[in-house]
Image (cartoon, rainbow, N blue to C red; front, side, top):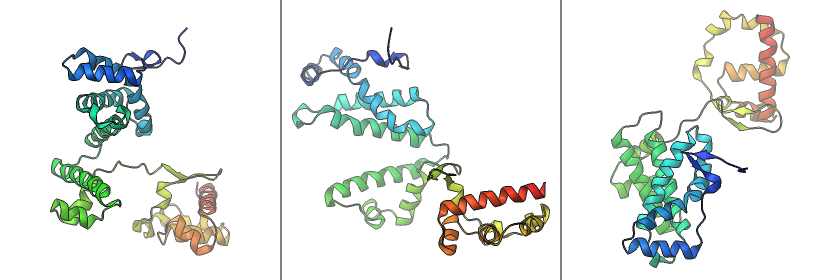
Length: 258
């Protein structure tokens, strides 16, 4: 009976081989001497490394098979470019290449379409950022990156923002054991000041039934357009409490409106 069997791209991951450092070195020597059968052995012997890397991207909603295949491309590039003379473990060299290949795939397949020229600026900016970080032992400023790229800093900021992964408004950002606080709870909207929706659902009558603190919270949130954090700071309670009171007040109002 096979234990912990998980198939990815038709590969039974429970049966993947693991190479010793001695075997790895021997196969690299064979490959660099022209024996390309050693390349396949190196690929098969390092698929577990790809599996460990793609675990970092499990929350992206991508198919594991797709990430595995892309990770394998990064692995093969690492094998083809690895230099035994550098005295570096292969995994140390390969992991950044596998991660880089997966990140490029995720950026290129972002549901928000970004122009090729904008992506090029963003990728060059990321490379320069890494280079300047290694050189100066600190994170470079946008101005330093724009100078090195010879591109206006506004274009650099816009390009880097454009390749960021979209975030769901319903993604929880905080939970203390009670009701979670979502991204949408942190967003203020000037359009919420429009009183038209109040008239449509007879909100005034429903709000009349709330206590003073509940009225204050809803007024600040939906009439003044403030975030829950701003409300919490102003009335002296935690953001989690604001979230609970807001939800309870809305639920109470809905009973009277319906």
